[in-house]
Length: 149
Length: 248
Image (cartoon, rainbow over all chains, first blue to last red; front, side):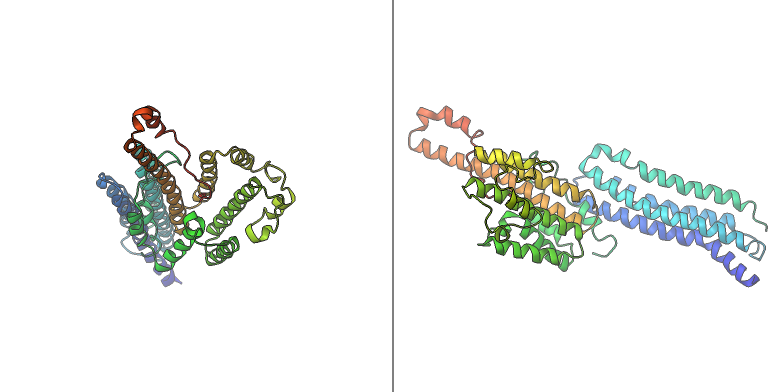
C-alpha cells in the first residue's frame, strides 16, 4: 500500500508540469493556427497575432513552479497523497485553462481581424482564464507549505 | 490539415464579408477563395462543391426541370449526413425557392398550385397548395416577408424583390453561422455568403456595363447631344436589369 501511495506522490509531483505542458502546447497550437490564418489575410500586425497566440505558454511555467513548490526531501506514505491531490488537480486546471485559452484566443484573433478596434477587449476572456490559472498556482503554493515533509 | 486545428487557420484566413449590400466588391477574389479552399481535405472539397452547386443559382441553372433540382437537393442532403446544420440549410433554401417559385407562378396567372410535388420542396408544399389564393399562402403570420415579396412581385420591382430574397437567404446563413466558428459548417456558410455577396456585386457591375454600352451607342449615333444629361444621370438610376430568376 505504501508503495502505491509513494507512486501516486511521484505522479502528483510531475503532473503539474506534464499536464501544464499539454495544455500550453494545445492552446498555443490553437492560437497559433488562428494567427497563421490571420496573417494570410492581413497586411500587417503579424507580431500581435503571434504574440497573443503564445499566451497559453504560461500554464507550463506555472506547472514548473508548482512542481518545485511540491518537491520534498523524500516522497513517502506521509506526503504521497497530498502531493498527488495538489499536483493532479492543479495540473488538470493548467491543462483545461491552456486549451480553453487557445480557443478564446483563436476567436479573438478571428474577430479582431474583422474589427481591429476590438483587439484589446477581445483578449479579456483569455485574461480571465489566465487569472484562474494564477488562482490554482497561488493556492497550490499555499497548500504546498503545509505538506508534511 | 490535421485535426483538431483543421479549420482554425482556414477560417481566420478568410476576410470578413460584412453585411449584405454594404460592399461594392467582394473582399476576396474567386481565385484566392479557391486557393484557400485547397486547405480542405478532398472529401470536404467535394461536399463543398455539392453544397454550392445546389444552393447557388448558377449551379441549378443547368438543370432543365424542377424535379431534377429537387432530386439533386435530396442527394446533396443525404451526402451531408454528418453535418445536420448544412442539411437544414439546404432544406431551408429549397423551401425558400419553392415559395418564390410559387409567387412567380401565381403572378404569371397559374390558378392552382397544380402538381406541387413536381416543382416544390419541403414543409410548405401543402400550405401553398391549400392557400394558393392567400397572398402569403397562409404563412404570413410567421414569415411576413412572403407578403412583402408578393407585393413587390406584383408591382414588378425586381431589384427590391431580389434584395428581399437575398436578405432572407443571408438571415438563414446568419442563423446557422452563429452556431459554428471553426468547423466545416463555418467554411461552407462562409462560401455561401461569398456567393451571394459576389453575385450582388456583379449585378451592379453588369448594370453599369450595360448602361455604358448604351451610352456609347447613343453617342455614336449622335443622340447623346440631345439627351446626354438625362442618360448620364440614368447610369446610377437604371434598375431595369432583369434579375428575375436570379435568386440564389
